[in-house]
Length: 98
Image (cartoon, rainbow, N blue to C red; front, side, top):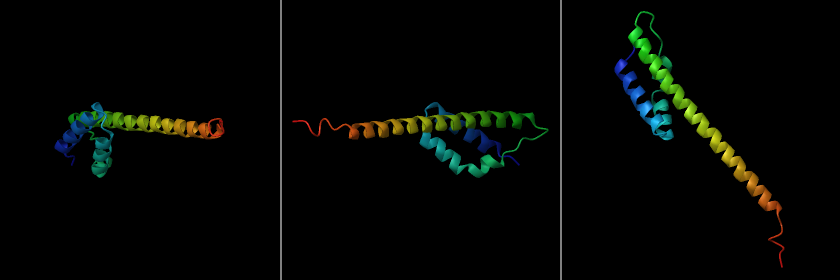
């Protein structure tokens, strides 16, 4: 049986973390409740539960998208800094200036 109170609490906490863009909190919530998240299944006869599941899935999807976008931005910044460092080390004008 699905624990609706846990689902509502998790949805609320995850939504709050997404709104303030708290990546550590998003990852903590997903790691702590991983088994619960993967145990969620829709019920054929209960539309209220299905609506709550749909809301949670939408919030969870937003959280995943936010983390992925941030990861992509950080990778790009890392690439740019590595690229800049390599181009600076190739420039020898300052080292050999007289």
